[in-house]
Image (spheres, rainbow, N blue to C red):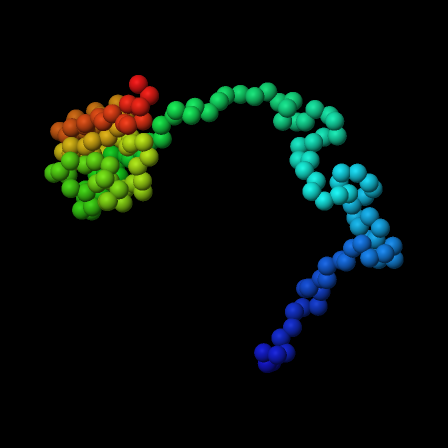
Length: 160
C-alpha cells in the first residue's frame, strides 16, 4: 500500500444535504423550516419562549441572593504547611505570610486574604499571618508552640 492509495472506508464521509433547491430535492420550498412565521426567518431568538404559556423559569419559585460584598479567601490547611516545611519550601523560623505561601507554591493567588484551616498535623513551631483561621487551626498552632497573627483585610476596612 502506498500513501496515494489510502482511502476512507465506504460510507465514512456522508455528503451534506443541499436544501432549498426545488421540490424534487426533498428539502425544497421551505427548506426544512416548516411554515411561515418567526422560526422561518433568520435571527430567531425565542429561547425559553413556550408559545404564550408561562415559561418554566418564571413558574418556579426563586430562592436566595448573591452577596456582592462577600469576600473570597484562599484556603490552606495545616497539613500542607507542614509538608512544605518538611520539603524545605517554607521556612518555619521566619514569619509565614501570603507572599511566602504563593512563593512556595502552596497557593496560586491570594484573593481577599488567606484563611487557615485545621486539617492535618502540625509539628513545627510557626508564626503565621493570615486574614482568618478556624478554631481547630488556632488550637493546633498554639499546641505546637506557634502563633497566629490575624490581619484586617482591606475589603473589610472599606465597608466599615
